[in-house]
Length: 408
Image 1 (tube, rainbow, N blue to C red):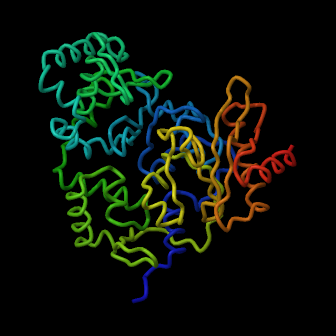
Image 2: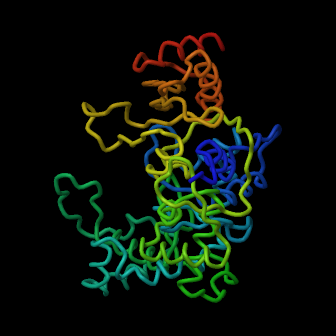
Image 3: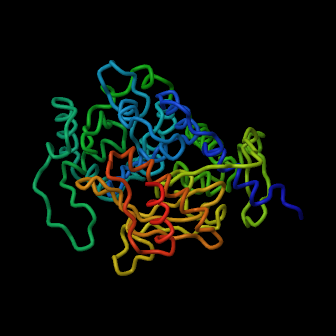
């Protein structure tokens, strides 16, 4: 049976849906550009690792080039009405910045906190309801507050434990998951928690809560538009829907004619096309991709579309790492052609390339100058005024170092 889409066509559709078929703005990047990009991808994942850059800043840079990061900060902060807030934090695809209009579509997750939240978060609501009530009252009286302002005696950290949260922090996380408090803003990436009704617009909170099924269908629509063409697991993972419900919602949208079933060359699973998806004949992108970029965050999809096996190695012991601690894929044209292990040496003002690796079939003489140019651009955007320094690790390191030197 002939596939409806070739593998290359599906890849270009996916890239276009994520904004990589568009030229970067020629002039200054404004909030209008940020809004459009966020509208295309649907949300921005948050992560605390800052060895290179806070991850939620990078997807917009990857698509738009240098932009004022404070413009995104303003969109995601409560500023007492001086600037209209446009994004809020919640568990969407992990912790994420999400457009306000999707808040009603996530209330079903808030309502399920007692079943779906992490074990310690569920337990504190069940076993220490008085503490939870006290923490909420503290937020009411003193918010926005840091988690440290709720600290009670901290238990000893267990071997292998990533976080050692005190009970006050766990209570805050319950209140956050259940939608009773939210992040008013972040300072040095630390949340300042406040009552949701003091942070989000009243007219938003007064909107009718949609039925669970319709809320999930809307999230699948957002995912389908952002993916262009996708399998059901791709779509469900975008907002981390339970698999059983994801299957039902996709089937309902197919039946309603909102998703078009297609076959894609080389894809074993059935695929679904967003009917309005662009089908460019060519994509000429150039971008470094955060490990948490929505183009690549679902690793089975990344491997299927780009033939690119990718695992983040932050949590892998150093001797067992293959490529490095914080490795970013490099997109050139419509292919992932290289990966680089990056670190921002803020004290020295240098972007360190600790390892650089070409993908099989990539031409170093073509890839290295393009990668060098993108690294120089991102270094300047990050305020690393002393440029790029390339180490020796990786088969692309020597050509890349030569290209960096040639660029001056």
